[in-house]
Image: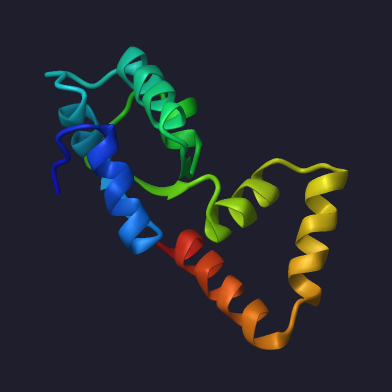
Length: 123
């Protein structure tokens, strides 16, 4: 799907919780004709600017030869999914504590969060 701008993508994420997009979708959103490391840097800055994160990070952050068909999962950093993903991707004492709290939450809620993590990881 093509998004007119980052706010449109943010709205889609708000509705579904997680959106899978190709690098081509992101390139077209920023109105570039070619995909390269500089465009990826702008994608990262643009997504962060509207409160969105992405996974796997290496597809955008460390990709010297990006391909338009490569995909990333986009999530809102302040959402339940986003908080868990950020905690996993950014190890540290506070995030370890958060993950332990999530793991110790009631079983139904923990299962829901684990399902969301599986969706992110398995694509």
